[in-house]
Image (cartoon, rainbow, N blue to C red; front, side):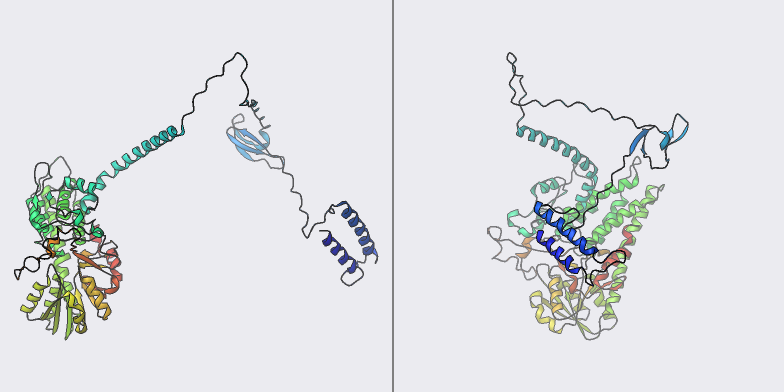
Length: 566
């Protein structure tokens, strides 16, 4: 610090009498010199004492003192806090009850005196000895920390218990409906046992040890001969048409998304016709109560429902809620039956005809079209193109265990279409001469992914490798808001015994090497029903509202699925 001061002093003395130090007219020439010598003597004196000069610092100016705060008095009048300061103008602060009007700050009087604080008692020292003749008072034993923790845990559990009870009571009805409409997770034994208590259909499930762990959350049952009905007084009443339909679903007699949805709605119409109405209750609530066990039986117990069936059930529920008040029971039945009939006609039958007409326009003369398995709307498209006198060939690719493409190849050949039937393992060799791929779908999700028969994703991937367009024919009632990126979380498992059977047509019932698969400890069979084709492999979706890319699926869900809420 002293070195810096000396440097500043020498620099100031050098500047005296030069151009850098301008002289004022009001002072003499030697004024700066005298001042500098006077300053140097002060510096040397303070340096000897070891202190710093007043007002001097290392390039930092001295901070100015903050102004003193003015005292402000507060006065409490009729419940208002008032600011009273000598420099403030009179302010309207509140109502003065004594004068019958508003009082000003200057008229409120002096501030009340502060209350006296209580005198603090001196703390007693812990080591103070008791007086002679007086016994030391017994102090209560401090509770152990463990007991305190236990009490806190009990209190928290009690509070949580009351909150959970309220939540359970509020969501009881919602949870029942959710479990009826959504398939259970079959990897939880406790939830599975609770679920099976109310089951109407008794089916033999595959042993948990013989399931593939990645798909253990999905239901899997043994052969169809294990199906037996448990209908009694303790079970909810279900219409006989619904019981027949459920058994057909479980045994695989009715397959295909459109066929299953049409059969379910037809059985619902019969149940509504024979519905018995109780005059004491509201008809809408009674119809909803009738619908709950039907949905549970058909769409959960017998076979998991498809997204299209879920949209159809939603449509029926909205139709029940929109029934007009004041109508007779027969009029409400007729209205509901007509609404269901219009859904089947408009959303399935007419939609398939429009899709077939639009798909046939995409077929040109000389095309070689590849299709996988069997789809009703794709089959109608081929028939429509044949009516338009288009010359084309069809390659039907099939796979085990359903062999659904055999029936399609036979029907097309009977109509005069040049067909080729092959299995999925020879797909790469057939792609060299294919010009288009046309497949059906069980559902199309909001992200553009296509849910269809297992093996469709392989066909789409191979077509993408060979730059062949993939066209999906699908009705918009099969569009679903769900987003899915794999076929693991939502899928359906078939009977593992179907993989043991080779071909019934050629009287080869079972494979001798896999017939004893249940006894082999490390052997498990996986029979998937659906797979998921990514949106990148799909070129176009043909619907009854037009030919759209997969990126427009959310737009269709927003604009053309209003029937689910109206």
